[in-house]
Length: 288
Image 1: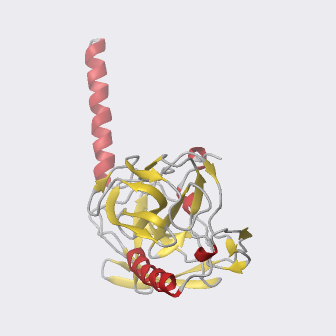
Image 2: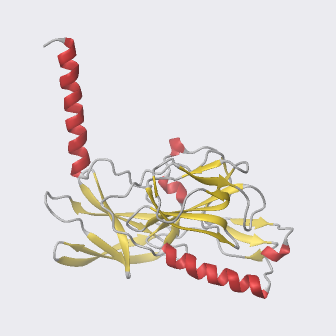
Image 3: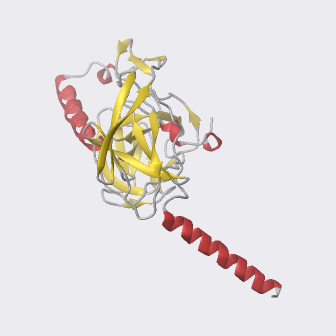
């Protein structure tokens, strides 16, 4: 066999191996970092993958939970809300015709405080009209967070939507003009206005809107209860129903809504819970 034939043969083996991995559904899952705390992600093993067997199903209460395979093992990837009570929690699991419950622990976490001063007091002490608008929008966002679209696979290996200095971290207990407000349910990346914002992974555009607090916002549905949210945008370049690829530009950064300066607020939603986005970003891909 000459060198050219060897190279072709080797290339053919690589292609065959890649296809085998892809169709096995086992190879490229990249689980987020496990963190069993409020606002974290619990990775719960569900047993070995068996040839021909259906994917297990799992629920937290009535909310379906993402299940994926990694290294020939099934895992439930469970989002834990920031108000989750520390202690024992229960996951309902269906494997084949058998439904059972599986307990797991949630540990306490004390997030630090953040004090922010806003010159525009109308974003803190809302008028009756603004408060009514904000309440309507919160109801819409809550419904979007619980959206479920079954998918064959979900890409869990996220990229940062923009490269910049990581600012306010997830979970900070916030005070605006010394008044307590909801915890910070995302990750802020400080960048100049007009910086291209990219999709963290492939998905479908679930919603676009201009909200009182979040400003111009895009929701991307990655399937199986995993959703990303991109806030305070200056411009939106996609529409509802668009399919986006990982790294595709979806808009430009800005400071719309309640923002003290240009930045991207990036949130990750998992089975209806806002969770720490940094758990989905390998350390080598972060930029400080």
